[in-house]
Length: 166
Image 1 (cartoon, rainbow, N blue to C red):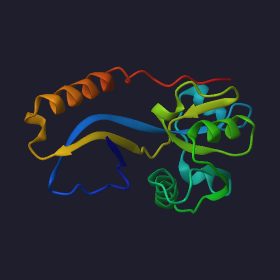
Image 2: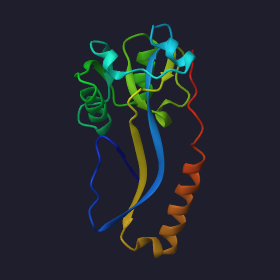
Image 3: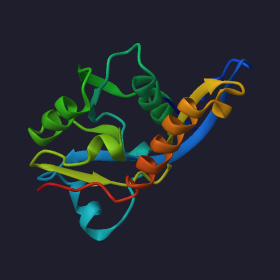
């Protein structure tokens, strides 16, 4: 399996085939006690350009998830002021809940967010695409087909919205 962000596509070697599993929208995680949390209650998206100067929390700089945050903010006209990095989204969300900053996080990674976190849609959508990768023609092999079908079936179960803890 692999993933890519619509603002940071990843090429696939022609020897392989890609099978789309799902689209996973990226959400803005903000402290529930902060001023941006009101948008979550009102159902209003947040413009990313309004976040210039805010403390950002991000994954390790060598990851596609960190690059997604950089590109989303650059598209909005600023570079994020990253104050902390962690390799786990749950750690980043816990830091958001503690009031340390804000972050962009795929909805699947935000499922069961810790207390003190509100999830808000960004006005400039970003989508993570999750897909399978197999050798070209490999899906004709029964064992590979079973795995690909099982992954596709599981992916359909993740269309529910993420929970938002207060």
